[in-house]
Image (cartoon, rainbow, N blue to C red; front, side, top):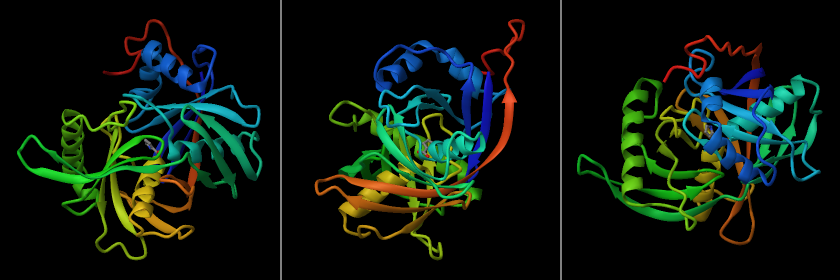
Length: 308
Ligand code: PYC
């Protein structure tokens, strides 16, 4: 299996160039379900140690169903198949450019939740115009196991987010405490059945810190489904957050704001209104290719499916 690894603001993406499973025919949403339901050991083998690394998201290239798209892609982390992945899309564009498969300019990419547009500005810099994003429900209060209450917004940006103010500074020294808090918030959301009209539960949690971040709007901690924190500012999370800020009229259409990740990498984020309760966000960030490898899966390897 041939893979190309990149990182987007520190967050790794592994593009599977060849050797992935063949999925069912049909829309990417169905192919993503097939991957989640029937190919768990493949996902584990690619992302778990020793071949993978904590936090890594994989991008499985598939044929697009829409001929206007350069490629189709299904993203997954070690715990879930994702609807969309912003840092992964920036990493994918830079990887395809590195392989000579994507030129500078604008291209469409098909994901299970819709078509996104990428603009490759140079070898490392990409803008992603994401799927329509929205504030689903503001000011939702959930009770944590320790009896305390947290109030936040339930929002969509290609994945499903609960977004709350951070009670402690979002900085690298607090990653363990922020992770524990975000996991307990997500459990409380699940217990309270916070979900989309179609029954999608909260899969990511964002803790927003607006104190002392210079010209950045905020520094945000993002918990992913695999309980890892996003090293990047999270593309789908930034989309969900700017949808909330747009709905509350805190950020104007076409205004650019900077969101910083917990490790200090940043995205420039803006939006266009759709004239209804949704917006179309654009996220600009940078990725760098870091490895081009052939993964070997020997039948005698006791850790062929990774370390559980
Ligand atoms: O950038 O959208 C994102 C993302 C989702 C999970 C990890 N990164």
